Amino acid sequence: MSIEGNLDQKEPRPRLGSDARDQIGAHLQAVFAEIEGEPIPNEQIDLLLALRRVERERERGREA
Image (cartoon, rainbow, N blue to C red; front, side):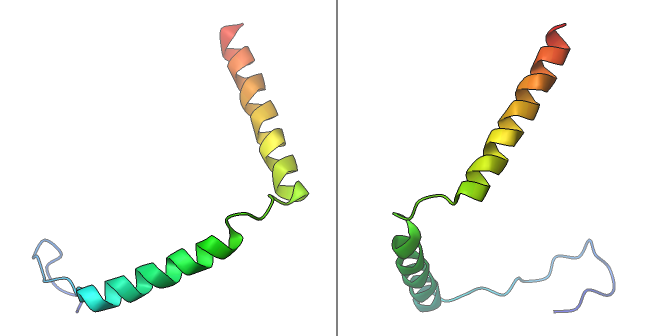
């Protein structure tokens, strides 16, 4: 598939067959099933809490 030429021209997009999609889906489900029950690392929790504080401070600044 070329990116040169007229960009307005619609070219057929490559598509995966249903077997390939099924295999990818099954693999992704297996990978995420392994990590689904793991706790969120403390470093990420700290980042989320810091983001929440900044968002609240911005909201308070808009209300004033």
